Amino acid sequence: MASYHPPIRDMQFVLHELLDAESTFTALPGFEEATADVINAVLEEGGRVCESVVFPTNRVGDVEGARFGNGAVTTPSGFKEAYETLREGGWFSLGCDPDFGGQGLPHTLNVFFEEMLQSANMSFSLYPGLTRGAYMAMRHHASEALKETYLHKMVSGEWAGVMCLTEAHCGTDLGLLRTRAEPKADGTYAVSGTKIFITGGEQDLTPNIIHLVLARLPDAPAGVKGISLFLVPKFLPDAGGEPAERNGVVCASIEKKMGIKGASTCVMNYEAATGWLVGEPHKGLRAMFAMMNHERLMVGQQGLCQAEVAYQSAAAYARDRIQGRALTGPAEPDKSADPIIVHPDVRRMLLTSRCLNESARALLGWTAMQIDIADRHPDPAVREEADDYVALLIPVIKAYFSDYGFEACNLCMQVLGGHGYIAEWGMEQLVRDARIAQIYEGANGIHALDLVGRKLPMHDGRLIKRFAAMLDDFIGEHRDDERLAEFTGPLAQSLGLLRQSTAWIATQAGENPDEIGASSYDYLRLVALTAMGWMWARSAKVAVERREGDNTGFYDNKLITGRFFMRRVLPQVKGLADSLTAGADTVMEMDADAF
Figure (tube, rainbow, N blue to C red):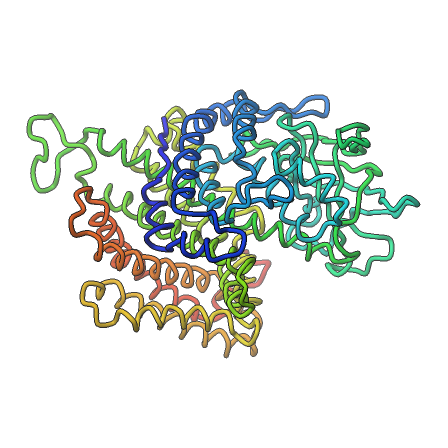
C-alpha cells in the first residue's frame, strides 16, 4: 500500500525559515493574527486530519469510483464522512473572508493545507477545491445580493461550487461555446446548453451545488468577447435561503476515466435553468479567471502532491526491499541481500523526485505569498510587482509541476519494480491520477504558449525582466560566499541561458509566429528549472547558516538534496536552450498528410 505522512517539517522550513511568513503576514492588513504559532497549529492539525481521515479513502475511492444512476452520483465509501469531518472542523474556510464566515487566514496557508489534502486523496480534494475557486470568482465579481445568498454556505462547505466551461466541440477555444442565456422579465436568465468534463457537477456530499456557467446572451458578439458568466444553482433557494425548487440542471452521465475515479466527471444539461449574471455582460472570462488562476495553481500542485506520496512510498519500499548486493560490497553482510536503497540508480530516482518536490513546495509557497501581497499590501507598487510574479509563474507552475509530478510517479513506480505495477501497492494509482493534471485546466502546451506568447511581451517584457533582476540581486548578494558557490554558480549560468533564450525568442517571433509555439514548451521548462534552482540556492543559504548544532540531519540532508538538483537536474537547461533555438522549421516543415 502507498504511504503518506504530511511533510510538516519541510513545510515549516519553507514558511518560517525560507519565507519568514510571520513577518510578511502580520504586516499585511487583516493578517495580523497569522503568527508562527497559528501557522504551526494549522499545519499540524490539518496534517493529522488529512492523514488519519482523508488518506484512508484514497484507495477505496479508486476501487469503487463515483457511481451514476437515475441522474444522481454516489461518491465512494467514506467520502461523505470525511467531507463532513473537514466541514465541521472549518477546514474549507481557512483562507475565506470573515464577512462570509471564513477564518481570514492567508491564502498561502490554505495552499499548504491543500497540498496535504490533495496528497491524501486527489479525487476527494477536487470537490472542496472547486468550491473555493467558485468562491473566489464570486467574491470578486458577483453582486452583493448573490454573495449574501450563496457565499456563506459555500465558505462553510455546506454547499459546493463548480466551474462549467467545456463543451463537446470546444475546450481551450471558449470562443466557440454555444450555451445560451435568455433574459427573463424578473431579471434572471434561462440558461440552456450542455457542458462536459464538469468535475463535481453532481455529487452526494452537499445538498446544493452552485454552477458557474459560461454562456452567450442573445446580443453577444462572436468569440470570447461575447461570453458571460452565470450562477446556476442545482436547487433554487427559498426565502430562508434553503434549497427548494429543483432547477433545470441535470446530470446526463459521468465519464469512465483513467484515474481520479472518486471524482465525478459529469456531462451536465442545462434546460432553461434559472441563472443570475455574475459580473458584467460579455465579460465572463474576466470573472472566471479569478477562479481559473486558483485552479491552475491547484492543478500544478497536484503534480507535487502525487509525487510526494510516490516518493514517500518508494523510499519506504527501497529501505525494506532486499535484493542484490551493493556494488562496493555487502552493506548488510548478516543478511542474504542488501536493501535496494544501496543501489545508485534507485537513489537517482528517489533523489530526482525528492529534489523536485522540495523546490516545487518552496516555489509554490513563495508564489502563493505573492498572491497575498498583491491582494493586501498597502503600497500599489509592491502589489504590482507581486502581481507580475504571479502572472509569470502561474503557467509555469501549472505545466511544469504537473509534468514533473507524472514523471516522478513513474520513477517511483519503477523503484518498486513489478510490485509497482500491481494495484494493491498503490503506485500505479498515483501514476494514473497524476496524468490528468497535465491535461485539464488547459493542456500544458497551451500554458507554454501563454507564457511565451502573452506573458513575455506583457508590459514591454516587464514580468520576465523583474524576475531575472530579482535572481540577479540574490546571486550578486552572495557571490563571495564560498559556502554557496556550488549553488549560486549554476544558478547564474542558468539565468544567463534564460536571458539569452528570452532575447532569441523576442527577435525571432516577429519574423515567424511559429517560433513562439515551437520554442514555448522548452522555454517554460527552462524558466521552471531556473526558478527552482533559485529556491534551492535560497534554501542552501538557510541550511549552511543553521546546520551547526543540528543533530537531526535536516539541514545536511537539505544541502545534499539541493546539491543533487544543481548538479544533475539543473544542467538540463543547457539542452533546453539549444532545443528552443533550433527553429520552427524543425517541427513545421513536414506536410500534415505525412503524419
